[in-house]
Image 1 (tube, rainbow, N blue to C red):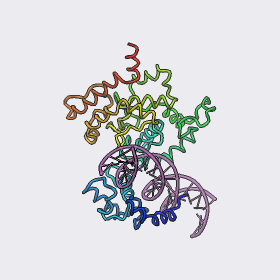
Image 2: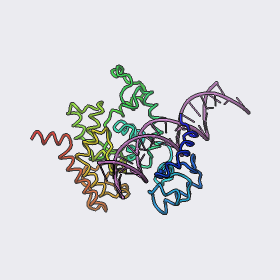
Image 3: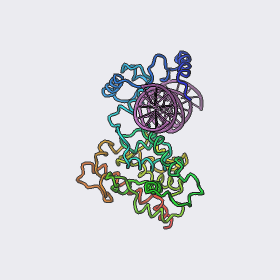
Length: 323
DNA sequence: AATCTAGCCAACCGCCGCTGT
DNA sequence: AACAGCGGCGGTTGGCTAGAT
C-alpha cells in the first residue's frame, strides 16, 4: 500500500538537504498535491497557451502554481491538452489497443502514440480495468496474449461469437499502412497489411502468427510501416526511438531503419499529414496524385516506402539472396 | 437509510535514458 | 568520463462513485 503521509513527511524532512545539493522537482515543501482545481487548470492552460509546453521545472513558478513540474506536465498531457479526446473508447480503438498490445506489450506511450487523442494513462487504465479482465474471461493471458492454459489450446474455442471475434482478432497480424488502408466495419480507416506480407506469413514457416517473436520481428523488420500511426502520420516516441519489442528487436530496427524514419519524420509536418488524404483513402496502392498540395512530401514518403518494400523486407531480402 | 464492496481513473512515485556541462 | 538535471515512462495508489446488501 502507498503511504502518502509518511512518504511526504520523509520527503519534506529530507527536502532541505536535497535542495542544498540540487533542486529536484519532486521536493514537496509547500507544494500542493491531489486533484486539480478549475482555477489551477486555467492558470496552467493559459500559461502554456502563451509560452508553450516544456521547461516544466520552472513552469509552475512562472504560471503562479504551487505544483511541481511533473504534476503540471501530467495534468497538461493527460487532461488539458486540446488534442486529448474525451469519452468512451470506441470498438475500433479497443481493437487497435489489443493488437498493439500484443505487439508492444505494456508500452503505453507507444500504443497511445498510434491512437490519436488518447493518452498513455487512459489506455493503461482502460487496459487494466477492462481489457485485461476481458482477455482473462476469454481464457487469454493478457500479458502474452496466449491461452491461459496451454493444454487447452487444442480445445475448441469459446462458443460465444464475441469470444470468437476476440480470439480471431488477436491472431490477425496488425494492420499497417505500408501499402494501403481498408475500411473497418465501423467505417474508420485502418492501415492494412499487404498481400505481399500475407504471402510472407504463408510461405515462411517461421512466421506463424502465434509466435510472438516472429510476429514482432516481422513488424519490426518492416519498421516504416509499424511506425505509421493510426491516423497515417509517422510516429516515433518523443525521443525519436523505436521501442518495439525487446531490446534485441529495438537493435534490429535501429540498425537498419532509424535514419530513414528520422528523415521521414523530419519531412512530414504531422498536422498537415493528418489532414492529408494519402493514408486516409481506402486504396492507396498507387502513387500520390501530383495535384495534391502535399505531393512532394507524400511522394517522398511513398518513394522511400517503396524502396524499402522492394529491397529490405524479409521477402525482398529472400528474393535478393536467391538471385 | 446506512454500510459495504468493487470499479474507475486521476494523480503520484521511482526509475531510466538523454543531454549538457 | 563523470555527474547532474530534466523529461518521460510504467507501475501503483487512493479518492470518488455507483451498485449491492
